[in-house]
Length: 125
Image (tube, rainbow, N blue to C red; front, side):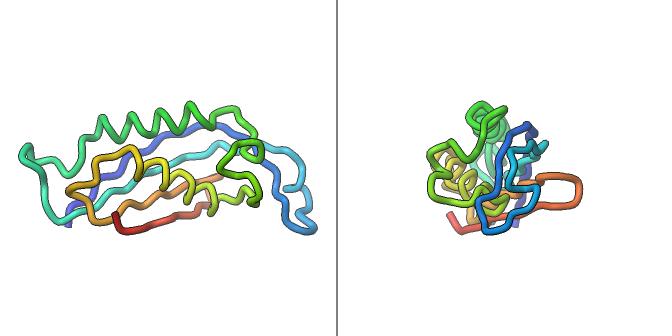
């Protein structure tokens, strides 16, 4: 199995909408790091699993969409608690829609919200 990972970072804001969120219920920022990890059993005709520049382009789109934004106000978060878990699933959907997945078996999105906490969403493509 081949695996390629590419990362990008950006700052975005959110506030949690769960009962009794404590200080996390106030608007605050995170320096997010988003990592796309792509896996598959075969390389293409150019011996690539995926074009890294294409993955970087998707991450640039994600950064442009969410950098300096309040996640709670973005359409993909409407009606959802903007947890790092939900954010990973949202980014997974955007990446799966944009990338050529012909040679891939899985796509994993990992998002760190700080040095100690992260969440991942993985699914077959």
